[in-house]
Each structure stands twice: as C-alpha cells, then as structure tokens.
Length: 481
Image (cartoon, rainbow, N blue to C red; front, side, top):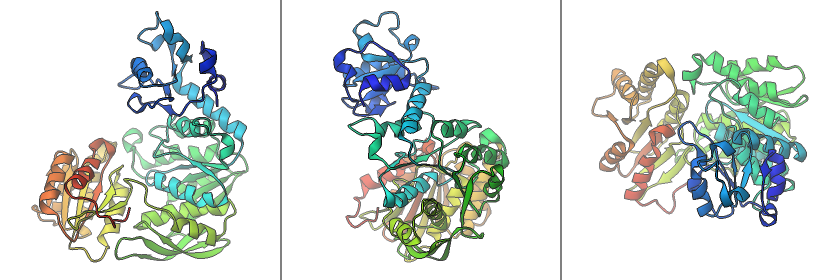
C-alpha cells in the first residue's frame, strides 16, 4: 500500500512529495536499531525512551518515512527538509491502532484472538498451524500482543508488496497487564473466535488476586463479535465461569481433566523428548496426534488449537495432521542438542510459577538421562506474594526429584531456599546473581547425558545461558529444534 493511502488510514497530515507519496514501505518498525532500508518508522514515546529522539538516525539508515507527533520532535520549530519525509499525527500509538482497525474492517475475514496467563504464544502458533489447512493465515510474529504489537502484525497486510487479499484469516495474540488492555485490542480487531487459555499468576503484582486477573482476561469474551465463538479451558474454573458473560455467542471447550468438547486421552510422552502422543477427541470424531512438544501443558495448548479448528469446521483427522507438522516455538520449549552430549530445553522467553512447574514436570519424566538440571530465573511481577511463590516452586521442584537447581537473580534465591527446605542438598541447589554466572556453572559441571531446562523471564535474560552454552559447545547437527 502506498504511503499516501497509509496516511489516510492513519488520519495523518503530511507534506510528502510525489515520489514518496507513491512509495510502498518495506515494513513497519518501532525500534530504530532494527530499521532496514525502505522501512516506515513509528516514533513511540516510551516510558524511558522517546522514539522521536532517533528520527535522524532512522533516515540515515534508509527509512522511507516516519510517523511522528510534531511537538515531540527535537527539531520541532525548524523541520527543514525533514518536513517532506514525515507523517504527522496527534498520537502515534492511537494512529497505528486506527490504521489496523480500518485495514481489518475493510478486509472482513475471520479473526481468532488468543489470550491466557501462560502458553498463549504457543497456543497462537499451534492455532495458526491448524487453521492453515483451510487457507492462508496471518499470525502475530513472536509475542506482538500489545496496542502497538497488533498494528505491527496487521502491517504485514500493507507493506513489502503484501495485500490483505493474501490472507484468509488472522490469528492474533492479545496480552495484558491491566484492566482495559484486552478490551482495547478486541475493539481494534473484534474476534470471530476468542480463546482464553488459562488464568494464572502472571502480572498479579498489578491485580492482587487471580479473580481480578480473570476479570481482565474476560474482556476477551466481552469483545467477541455477536454470533461468534468463545473457546474456553474446561480445566480452569475461572475461565469456565466466563461462559456466563454472554448468551449471544457459541462456546467450545477444551480440557484434559474435565469433560469438554475437545479432549485428549491416552497421553504418552516420548522417552527421548521427541514429543507427546495422544488421542484427540472432538464432537466430529477422533484421531491420533503426535505432537513434537513435551508436557501436558503443551497438550492443552494443542487442544485449544483443536477447538479453534473444530469451530472453523475442520475434521479431527485434519487437525491431527496439522498438529503433527508443528514445531516448538523458539525459546518456548525448543530442544537443543550440544556437542558435549548435553540436551537443553530452551524455555527462556518467559516464566511464571504455573509455567515453571509444568516445564519441570515435563522434563522430570524424560527417560535415558544421567541427570536433570533446572536453571530457573527470577519470576517477575508477582507482587507481595512473590517470595512465597518462589519458595513454593522450589519445594515442588525438589519433590520432582530434580538433580540440580540453579536459581538466577533476585527472588530466585527464595526458589533455592524452598528446594533446600524440602530436602534438596545445598550443594545441589545454588543461587547465581546473573545468567552469565549460571552459564559458567553449567559449563563447568554439565556433560554427556545431562538434560537441562532453562526457564526464565526476559527481564532476567536467561537466554544468555543458552547463548553461552551454544558458544562453548557446538550444536549437534542432529539436534531436534
């Protein structure tokens, strides 16, 4: 889509010359460090850094134009030649939100929106895989699930030569850390199918209780189009109560423990961590699934995707076939083999108490390994209960007979204390203040036959453990990723 057309969608003022007016951006970016020639830069005023400070830099890197708020520019009173390169709006985040809303409204095809306290990115990726059986799917890259992440996702439809007509449906991840965020996102992209995966303790620092987190997640159900479908986790009582919020939509449920529309039975993990097998049951039939991901939590993620597939009219056989082609999302349970004989589960993208214990439980049942080692970073945004939540996770890790625990940074010290309290030897449960130190411990201790889980919040940068391990030990060519 040409810049002059994008300007209209944004409600932007501009002084673009004829050449720029007809330019089609290569892509959108809010990060000046990642600008490529031909990109459109969006100047977001962040909490700590204002993107308007980097306007000159992005044009030096080849940006075609930038969306800005005039008065925020460091050179606002003397625009000079820069005036002819800029799109002026009152609020950059609001403007790109309006743009994405208008693009989706004109496009008019099915939207699936997914939220949950844990696993929503994997749920989103599995759902996109399942729905690709019936058409071309646009999905949120990574975890772009915010008021600027959603527009960046939609920008795939109008940049780089792309067109809305290239896609038959959209699968969008929607995150939140306060009331009103999901309501805003569903207003920008009203879903035909809205998924609530679970209600955990992520972001409890901002809410105080899980019931209030559930209330914020319920904004997904409130935002579904009339006549649409809510996909709800039958194993989570707080999620199931959301079905009472609407009488004008359908409900499709999924679960393992509770009776649901889409269920899994005969769940069996592969002893070599290559995946999980189960029988998928849907109202339209059943089929054998072999999922290349480990753990019951990923079976639940697959069931959420199956429920979306069923809601879209796909058979159990087709759903199973698509799930069988799925691979672990990068940094979310990705399996890595190293040349020293160590196997690493890279789950370093994010962490919360529920997700940590599910991941440890999954690796604890794996067969054929000499030792099981957990590197667990501090879990953030847990509020006043954070210390006790970490300590309880430590107790549970000890109960799962893990051989070695390394807690990384801050409250992960309470994780270690909980493990020792539950009987884990102090030599086997230790604390590292940084991810780099934790990696050094692993490099000096771990070896052939060891299985290592690296789990942590991005703020703790536990991905640096993975980076250091890969740097020290080459990745095996036959590693499963």
